[in-house]
Image (tube, rainbow, N blue to C red; front, side, top):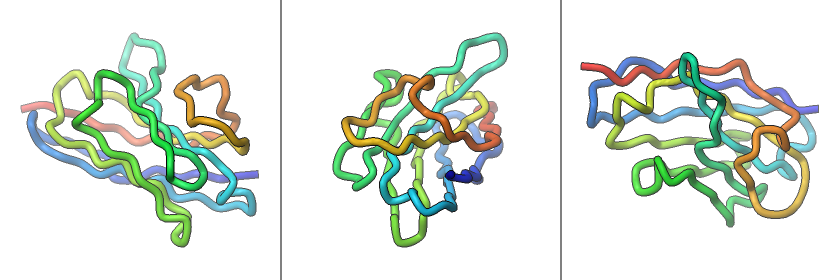
Length: 125
């Protein structure tokens, strides 16, 4: 079992930055790939970024490449999503999710059984 808790959301102006954190508890954390997903009102949930259990492999949606950076600190049981050059279209509830398996960190939400409660990110002037 894994328990996940997001933090770091808030209101930011266009062009600004935020760093989201996903803190985990559970014995299988170090074997878990972690993904970030987001859902805007009236839209389907979409994958944003994912990272392998070791941190060696990352994956980004085209819409955030070059602006978002995902990293993890296994000693602190935490994954960080650094979001720069934020746009109004980045506004959504952001969720972190985890799956305990090997292989590349994909962006299909159906593959992730463990989820946090989400944190709101609003990009507006």
